[in-house]
Image 1 (spheres, rainbow, N blue to C red):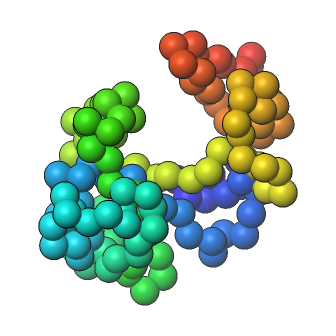
Image 2: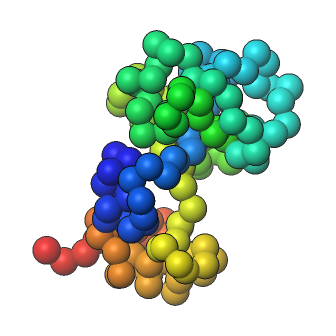
Length: 140
C-alpha cells in the first residue's frame, strides 16, 4: 500500500514513512503505548512509538525503518464515521490500523474544499473519491 500511495498519489520518495490511524481500544496491541485512553499526543498524530515486533509484518505500510510508527488514535465518540471506517476495515481484515496521510499532492497545500479534493483526485491515480455521502469514480 505504501508503494501505491507514493507512486500513484503522493509522487514522493519511497523511503518517506506514513502514519497509522488505529482504533484507540486496540492501540496498545500494535504500539508500545501503555494506556492509550490517557494519552493526549496520539490523538493528534503527535507521537511516535515502537511498533510491537510481531506486528511489523501486519502493518508494514505504517511501520518505519527501525520498527517505530507515528500513530493517531481514534475514538468513536470523537469521530463516529471515521471510527466506523477503521472498524469496518478491522472486521474485514482483522487489523484495526489503516494508513493515514494528508490529502494533497506533492508540492500542493492540503485539500480544504470539495473543489480542491476534486482537483487532487483528477490529477492523481486515486480510484475513488468520497465527498460526504457521494462516491465519485473515474471513467475507465
